[in-house]
Image (tube, rainbow, N blue to C red; front, side, top):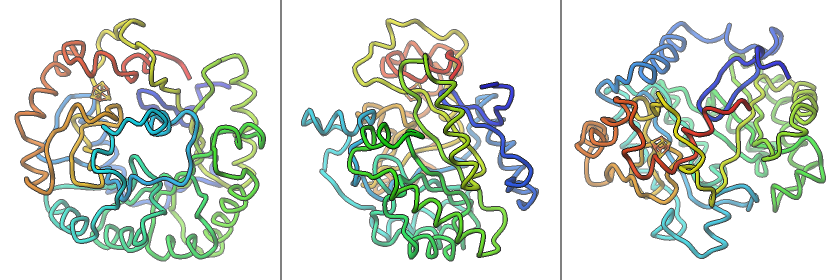
Length: 340
Ligand code: SF4
């Protein structure tokens, strides 16, 4: 696949541009593009502003699948609980409301409602979407689409979801069912088709949809897989198609070499709030070794400007991420050198 088609690239992920007939961008206001420019600028210049532009809020750390490549599955199978020290749980709705209402006046522009779990499992997920949307935020969700039935599709659209991303890890039924343990290829594909039809009928324009998959470790068949994947989802009318590189939990990424000049852009533009209020800086630290604070005890503004955050950003600003042990062994700097 020609990577010149890539419309968006983050360190470990790239996305192919939507064709004009599926493009949602013409329906977005200028303020959206200003926010995206600021997103890129902060990461490139290492300027954290006074508050995150974006929050990843985890409605729940529960999941209805156990996908083979997911660090959560690996840790669960080993009885390791660093990523969920209090066990499984859902974010309290009142706490969520406080975060949204307190953050918008400080410059928050978007939220993504998921991190470690499957967000559609949260009993009030549609209310969460509506609340964030009413506060003027762009509201994104990554979902495995297992629970995306007709009722959920309609309620999410009524709530005002602006960006819905389907995690669907193979264009081939047998492969998909092996990877996404607990899901059924045909049923999930029907859910996605149903959502796309409901979206079309609703007359809502400007909703971004995306299907993305984690590519197999072996690069041998990647071009064929990407071509088949593109065809499958473009036929359903899904706008964006994304491909991520796999992180292997036990791999010694430090031994694979340093990425000179790497600076983790997310430290300057987004923060992650676990379902229990603990704040982390990125999606690369599943084991909670880089805890920046606890949003139940301090404000997010205090946490964003805290010593813990400053100490983490400082080596990244000098492009010396290797001085931070967790970053040194993280897959992200290494994978950002690789062409997906
Ligand atoms: S562990 Fe460090 S390098 Fe990896 S994603 Fe987090 S901040 Fe970035």
